Length: 284
Image (cartoon, rainbow, N blue to C red):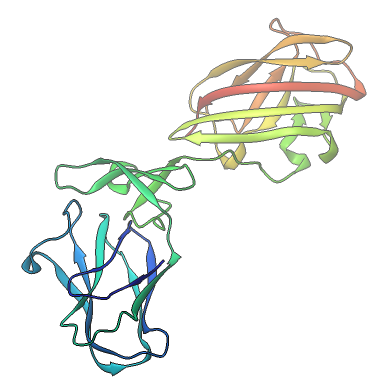
């Protein structure tokens, strides 16, 4: 945004969330000249303008004597943990010119919305602009992400992720084989919120062979293993669609797919095995 600064105390207002930054360009437009001053002030979160000068911090200040063109360029970043408000204003204007302008351009930063603060006012639960939720690392054991500007944050919720295709993610019990080609997979994705993972999987035309056994195996994504035992249902078809059972067992790195709710071997089907799976369970 670009705004003229034509009289004492009048100026541009803008807000930066943690991790955001902007570039400020002070200039005198139209070949005119400007005599006077310009400055950037910072206000604490929640303070409404105008405020007493003693309640603000002056971050940048310039005095101009018959200046033309670009006066100064600055990058301003909010490296704190709270939303900050800023004001660019003119002062001691000594010329009648209306040509002094300030242009504010966003540089970078993930916009974040503070959902919950601790008693000291620090954010402990934040929503990023990509929809994921972050919390203070002190509250969670695994600290993996701090780029949002919230120190020691961990992602506890976010978008669905799709593992890269790997034929080794699909296998059979003991000597039974299960060949799932990349073109067979319609859906294979997961979402982890805290220690809870949901996996969706769908394939068609996969091949079961070898020695018949009771379950096929789909790898639990992201290198995770199951904590405790969990159950769900899966639909499967070799000759016709039927309801099967999906199971995770404590410490195992795969989901077991049983053909039926009561134990039954998978049949040999060179190109005719289809699966539909949705299961939610706890991971280590």
